Image 1 (cartoon, rainbow, N blue to C red):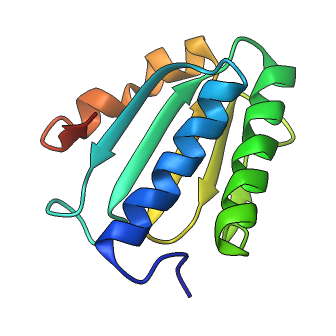
Image 2: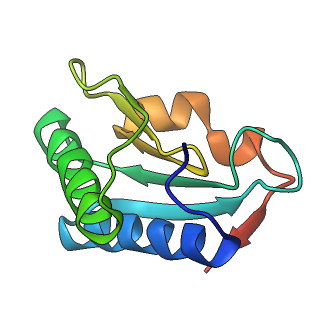
Length: 119
């Protein structure tokens, strides 16, 4: 089961996640619309945290905000123990929260360069 049932609801949930990251001072937020490129998800939200503690905090805040709005949590969470790259999979969208070094190494924006950036 995915979080949202329509494109509008999905985008609204992604914006709630983005707002949560902004509130906790996450940096370099990028929202990619990947819906026309892959069936994996509709959106990738990518952000950077300054250290493992902030990355965990950003992840928890995203989880809280989406749960508050939609009453559901992520389908899975990966990377929380190391907190260099935390991935929260909501089905329709995926939140990636990196430390700077890991983000630079994987460079998802380049990998998904065909995706549309959403403001």
